[in-house]
Length: 200
Image (cartoon, rainbow, N blue to C red):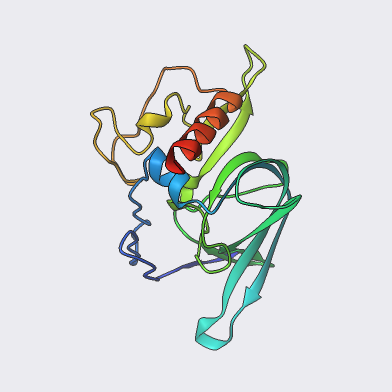
């Protein structure tokens, strides 16, 4: 039987961990996602490896998620890129962070990465820095979904609820959106346009 550990850690003013509570994260808007990311790329997960790190009371599990980089939008991730994340499973021991994105081989994503190697989840806004790619069954095009698999239809509404207010991942009412998801090409074009705007 697997043993699960809750991580009781305080990482920043955006996060709060306590027994029985989920991670609370303020959702970044599109400007912040693009501006804060040191590396932005599209890639496919080729490997996930977890291992123990640290000693004594500081002993914990870390996972290394390796991507084959398909397209670079910002920074220089190289041909392959590995993210170091807190948590994972080694043998029958599992350490989890609530709401942390979970990666598996074959996943295709667009990622907004910051502080890889030093931040416990090296994505801007944790789960909000991961966008899943999925083939639309009707059009056959690659479309963009959030980490929670909600369609992303407008980059300008990222981090906002239906009333335009900033939201956190622990909202009691999940967002619904009947609009068609953006294609991967349109989403990446919006990233490039924002990068050009921010570097003027």
